[in-house]
Image (cartoon, rainbow, N blue to C red; front, side, top):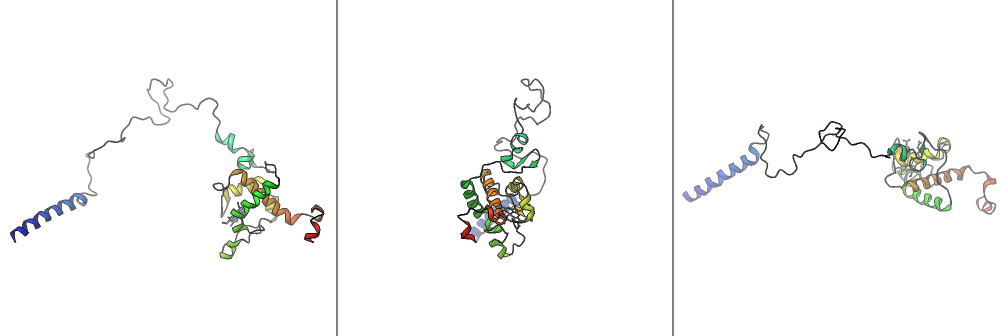
Length: 207
Ligand code: HEC
């Protein structure tokens, strides 16, 4: 019995010490700095931006360095570019800044079928497979407003989305987005072309 008590009391004291050690002082405040075993890089000399410094090498006494000569802001050089953003001079560009050929259209058709067709449908009429699962407000790409809108506006919708549609800039590279614009125009034209515009060889097959 005595031996048991000895072990019990030792174990009990250790258990209490452990519980108090881990949980006992949680939440209590101390004004003393914490014990620092490894200081890592907690404190290091640094300069805050846009204030002054006495650092001798910088004669102007500013902590922020001036831009290297010839630096061009991203807004002006990259964003105001018809190819990159579909916008130039603060407005969407009317016509796509790429040359459209059959390769571009094939590529556009392929990308459209991957990224747009599930919602907008094979024909672009907004009746893709998602409409069967309750997504009812997908835009019909044949509506008058979207026929008349600028190519740059379509490019912007594909890149950044519009209202409930999300953007596809992260998955469709710039050149492919223009190919999709070209293909959307093709879909639109497929319903707008007059008989005179159809090549004579094909005409009998669609009549
Ligand atoms: C997940 C479904 C979905 C996918 C995928 C999708 N869209 Fe949409 N799209 C929508 C919906 C929904 C709207 C209607 C947005 C609204 O008005 O709220 C829309 C609207 C549009 C519009 C009309 C924008 C306007 O000016 O009103 C265009 C153009 C368009 N989509 C093109 C595309 C193209 C091109 C792709 C492929 C790159 C694509 N969409 C992929 C759901 C989708």
